[in-house]
Length: 116
Length: 110
Image 1 (cartoon, rainbow over the protein chains, first blue to last red):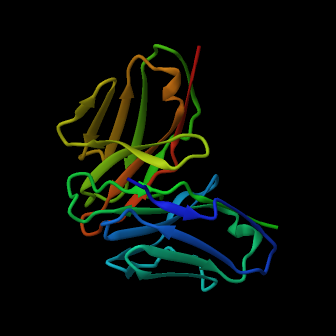
Image 2 (image 1 turned 90 degrees about the horizontal axis):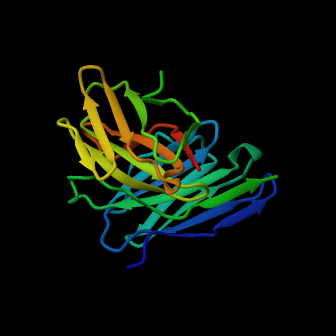
């Protein structure tokens, strides 16, 4: 079974450019989460979706960040314009609502973003 | 105050040693607790859930103290392959989202 797929794995861009990160959750999972990880702040939840609907976007840092989930198998996180402080590893994770015992989230390999 | 607090370490221990990590959480309404493991430059993965009665999985033992809002992870007979960052994770009562601690780094040496 394929796990959570993210692309690109690495992205280097210049300040001011638009960045789009992509995620394909595990088939059948109905929750999708976007996280950002830095050394200073650890793993922070940005936004999560249930059945393609955004449930909580309180972690989105500012209007430069936006996320969409047009269907059950695809989500994007967009940063426009990007800034050096956005440099981080961005993880996408998915989970299954019925898995109430563990609430386990399955993470993708992450996208390492560097904004110069 | 952070929702989930951990000692960042690093904990440097010799192979075969026993090591314990602690974690405190601030939301008394938290319902579920977990330890995730993250290898260097990799994604986090679920290590084990933490139950009120305490639970064991091989060399790993997790404990929960709701009164003190405290979670622990004990690793016995440490292996080189245990070297990783261990993330304490908490779920609030009304949400599917998880709150992660910043992690405790473990380095097991020969």
